[in-house]
Length: 454
Image 1 (cartoon, rainbow, N blue to C red):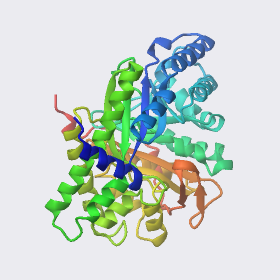
Image 2 (cartoon, rainbow, N blue to C red; image 1 turned 90 degrees about the vertical axis):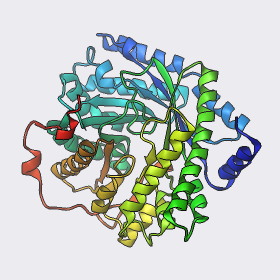
Image 3 (tube, rainbow, N blue to C red; image 1 turned 30 degrees about the vertical axis):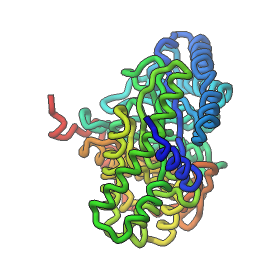
Image 4 (cartoon, helix red, strand yellow; image 1 turned 120 degrees about the vertical axis):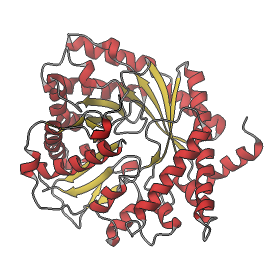
């Protein structure tokens, strides 16, 4: 039971410390929509999404009103489209038609994003996978609410370097296709290693094939709450600091559990997982960077940053798992640049570089996230950065991702504007030494020795 003291604490966190439920994400399986006729496939997809998700927005609004808990986003994740469209889609243009159908369904039900325009190719690409991947630039340019992802590696399978090379080209092509909007399409495209089946956060969300026909996953966020809590531990030892973070994460997760249970009961759809990820926004006081600086860093990127982030991530997970039996997704701390004012300030101050961000990804939730780079950056260099990030995930048995935005027509010193939760970002310099000969090798990078656990 939640007692009155917890209610009072929660109200304070909501009113003064930016606590919110970042997303209710309704997972919908489209496996029963598969058809060999493209028109029939599109009709089945549209009908199923608009039927299953018809009450998602109203349910979220009811919960917000009754409990006073802000729910920032209502979203949908679906079965990876390369699987759903394999029988009907014979060209990349066919997949673009599916993307338009998904976008239309998202508009109809009122969600801000629908994730799952995805392919899972960690060991190899089918013809369908390749067609979908090659359709991404056009799909991102011609839709508004579609998010796309490609899983190119895993600890068990290694890294599909053919897919990495192709994704470098696709990121560049997506940037060019959406150049009029500061290459915004790349902000909705993420390349992953060890992608989880139940992630509610965009742009990497999709519904894994092991999931139920429909599922409710909730993502909770509270960087501002954590920062306020650890302000009280200034000058204290690590034990007290860690206990403070852990207890705060417990309280935040309890809020998510309440919302998840309510949404599940009201919609008659099973509850899946709570993802406790400290996800920042451009709002002042809602920053992971500010948490790390409160822990004791002059600026994010200073020596000690990776250690501080490792500790933060671990305590967040420990607090979360005590509050819910079904913590999943990513759960930890996101470190996007464009969505975190403190990260932006650190880049502008010269303390935070891509190389330091890469080191931090060894211990955070995801990886190189929402990083704007010069539009002139080559596809091979983009692929090289992706490969580095995938290797971190593969070797460390964790999810990693790269959401890189080569902003066409802009260079270091310029700023890219994305708007809304996506924020804005300074263009960060990239190592300009070439890696083409490495990236152009064909085949798959083998799985690490510690992957053999059968």
